[in-house]
Amino acid sequence: MQYEHRLQVRYGETDQMGVVHHANYLLYFEEARTKFLAHLGEPYGELEKQGIALPVRKVDLRFRSPAHYEDELVVMVRVDRITPASVRFAYSIEREDDGVLIATGSTELACIDMRSTPRKARVLPDSITRLFH
Figure 1 (cartoon, helix red, strand yellow):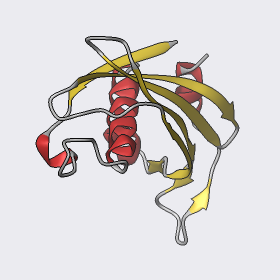
Figure 2 (figure 1 turned 60 degrees about the vertical axis):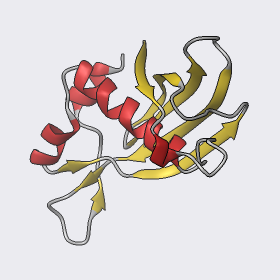
Figure 3 (figure 1 turned 180 degrees about the vertical axis):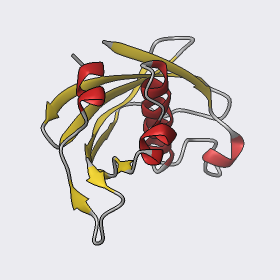
Figure 4 (figure 1 turned 30 degrees about the horizontal axis):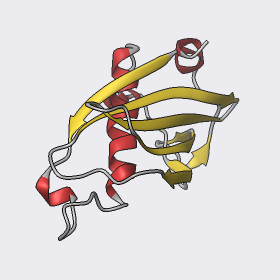
């Protein structure tokens, strides 16, 4: 299953040449991922209320072509891999008007118990793993 999230590049996300600064692609990934979870019926805020957090523990990002101020982008996200205590999402970002591939990447999120001190890894809840199968 793949989810598509659309966004427009804002001025503050670009450098002096109007090109998207590299750090913003991680924000685009996060925005698409959280919208994807909400679309599947498991908003991230609800997970946190249950004492579950999914912090990013690994990121991979490859730039293919620059995005510019006011570009309309499509961020495609899908679950790439699930383990008992983590989930990896894969992404691709394209410019909407011409389909040019802007970036690809992935994020791996660990599942932790927010109510434990110190924070400890935990098994992904069945409600989450069922969403991705």
